[in-house]
Length: 291
Image 1 (cartoon, rainbow, N blue to C red):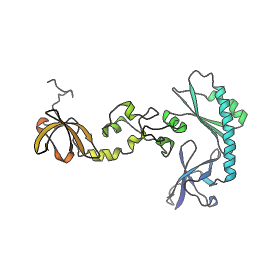
Image 2 (image 1 turned 90 degrees about the vertical axis):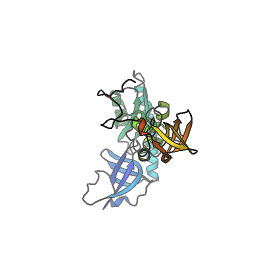
Image 3 (image 1 turned 135 degrees about the vertical axis):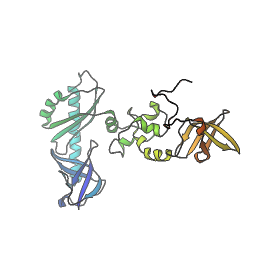
């Protein structure tokens, strides 16, 4: 069995590295030096795991855990990165499209300068990197990031009042669609379902599976149901669902609103006549007929 390290790089990406014997003991949470194709760089160890003897190991390896001297070296490179950022901002100040520099850093040995920027439209700034490369004797890795990455770099507060997940613990972004909100009966309002970055909230995916499982046995909104309330039979239409608590809000035929347990409600199939195909009354054009 081969032990591997999963390391989060300063740009937020996760890379797997194999651990040689010379690296010594490593612990989750440590900052480590790593050997990559462009030289030595640093990152935070977030996980240790093993692979089988026949599985291919990663191309790059961990060098060792960083020490005090390494921390000093990283701080010096951070000062150089601030000067490089100022030079780059001066070079692009006349660019027609507004550009925001969100992340600049040097690798551990200064062999590579990473620049991440955001813009409302695609912008190619490679023509401005020549002077930076000559001045700092380095290779510039230039990349335009999306609004989600920009929010993660800059930092922001979510609507819950806490630091956004992408700024703290979240390692990777998940693919999200409006269906995630619809499955959880969340109103499709941009103010409700969008995060600070203006995209769908990442937290829509966290409990999506649990909501889908809990909603499998609940009737859909808009269905006509019948139930017993205080010993009297009532009929009405479902206007709201508390999926995790298995509760339904029913607007009764006489205009009242009742919150009832889902197991106390029965679907009134007589108000939903179906044809031989099992579908509500529809024509061949899949449009509802006029009443």
